[in-house]
Image 1 (cartoon, rainbow, N blue to C red):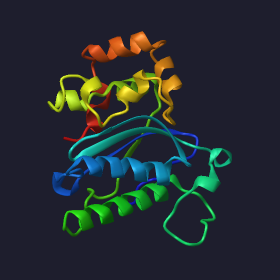
Image 2 (spheres, one colour; image 1 turned 45 degrees about the vertical axis):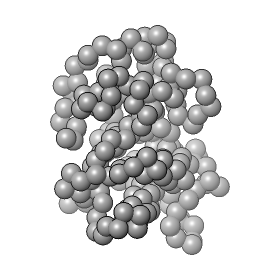
Image 3 (cartoon, rainbow, N blue to C red; image 1 turned 60 degrees about the vertical axis):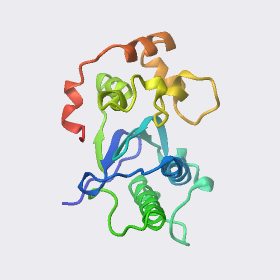
Length: 200
């Protein structure tokens, strides 16, 4: 069954894991390359609120830009001819294909890297949105004692003042202010409403 394309003007939790639960990231440069490709292929068509990369999976909370919001001059795709319709779903596929090719070449592997088609869930409530921002899987799985010491997530960027394309202001506004954002992340939260989306 084909998946419904990502629709413009909507918010989504986009996530996936390695084929057969295998690793997506083997070394530091793999994480960096994934982020470079994300910027290249996706920055023009989505607004990003939070992201986290783990050993064998990733999670993104994004908004799909409307047609008039897309920065077409910054658009990267894998064909010579400019597409008639800009599709966030196709941009993700271009990105994942590019990442798979680079990992296969670098680590002398073949075949699929990601599990089937990438997963997506529309975000339709403020609580769900807030829980996805909080979702601290690196801590849950023992990769770090707290989010501020795990390097492959958007948490440190959100609490910093450095220049970013991340939707920092809007993320913090979901918690009223930065201190509340930090406090919320320091407490254990009930994530029952997103449990069905989490991949182990």
